[in-house]
Amino acid sequence: MGIISWLLVGIVAGWLAGLIMKGRGFGLVGNIVIGVVGALVGGWLAGALFNIHQPITGFNLSTIVVAFLGAVIVLYIARLAKA
Image 1: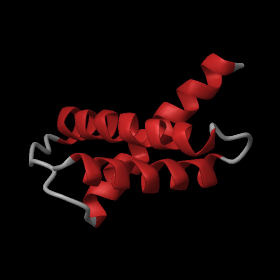
Image 2: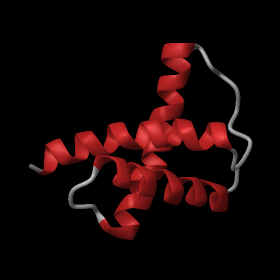
Image 3: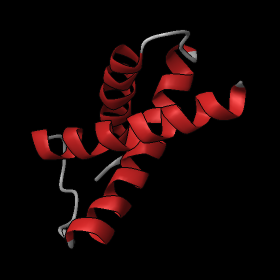
Image 4: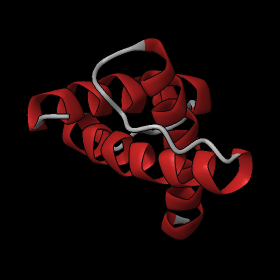
């Protein structure tokens, strides 16, 4: 997956996680970073917990869902660390 796709997934996942988690956000760049890191965390967790080891091939619904769930986890941890 190219860098543009990672950024698009990060933007969408970070934005969605920010909406769901509510409260003060980290801004556009912060949400992108949270989203991209969340995609990595979500992919790792999907492989570790559910034995899903298929490569991420692009911008699709399953990629967004995994990245979003990872972004929610990362955002929760970031807020704990910030407080």
